Amino acid sequence: MCYEGPVLIVHSKDDQLVPYSYGVQFKEVYKNAELITLSGFDHNFTQNTDYVNDIIVDYLKKVLIKE
Image (cartoon, rainbow, N blue to C red; front, side):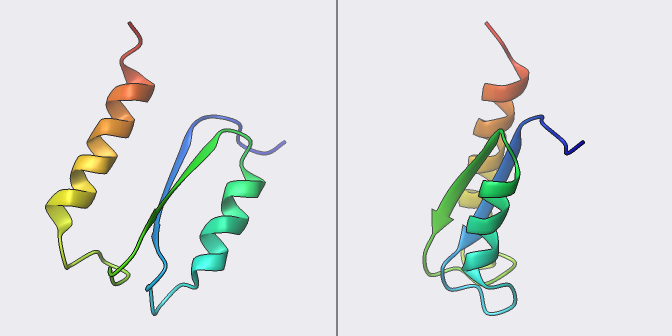
């Protein structure tokens, strides 16, 4: 059985290490996945790590804090 819990995929169309198509494929594999597509970022998001960290924190709040 495949993992069915929440999955966040943050992927840049400009990633030179891992093709963006992989992120799209993972979105299809995981039943409860959300894909956030960015542009202008390398694989490690070094152009603005704070921005990407905020995306992750917002997702974790949404998933973990159920009001």
